[in-house]
Image 1 (cartoon, rainbow, N blue to C red):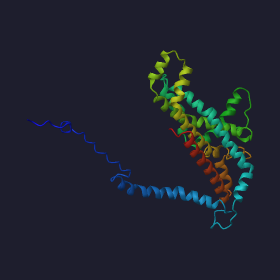
Image 2: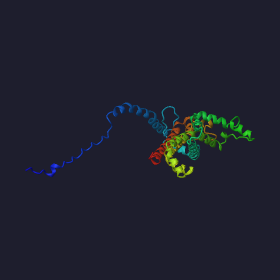
Image 3: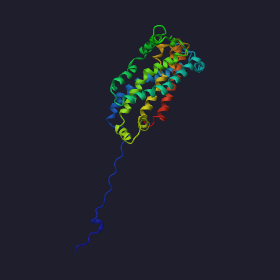
Image 4: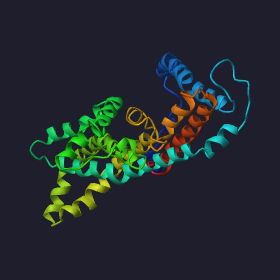
Length: 313
């Protein structure tokens, strides 16, 4: 008589699946040659052209140094004390804030409005985009020279247009109350095309089916803009704001051929102030202090904006 088999012998025992080996967090073997080949030259160039100049500027800023010989007249924080008591620097700082405000309230909304118009595939949209983008392609110094001629009170385009309607155009760039507003007009004209192209690229990435569904549901154009365009375009808007603020803090090339920071320091920015009071007057220590302050402002804004506003982008 056959002996009955035990239950354990008839049911196959499920074996535990072998544990997957944990992934090695180290770099792959093929990555090391690439790092060894390309990383040292990049670090060397970054150190020579970025780290060392920053360190030298911080070092020179505590000396009263003209640029000749070795700096030996140590003055500590006196350059910074003089800087923050200088009325021209305070005017330059206020002008930078004014440029940032105009960029936020005029330039970016104008660029967004034109981008939404062009993105609707109207006839000649590509031509209009190229025309609006051309001012940004033009270099800053030639653009400044062109607008200096436009504003010229004797031979410029502005007095020529004013004479057609029987008016006398003011000498805009020679008036300390009007010169900064003339520069603001040029800033908006020069850079809104760049932000417009950013917004057009962001709008083209939005699925058109979303707009069609909202239109079928009866949403108006403003409702579609507020509920679809703005939320989906938010990463591009945040990036555009970042570029606008950093560019406003570093504005220099276009102001120098137009006013040189005048009249009476009314159109100074922090960079033109650095050039006029640090380089042309051979006060390298004082100019280095201005550069350190500008560097700290830009770096602080960049890190805070990146960690606070763009942390999810």
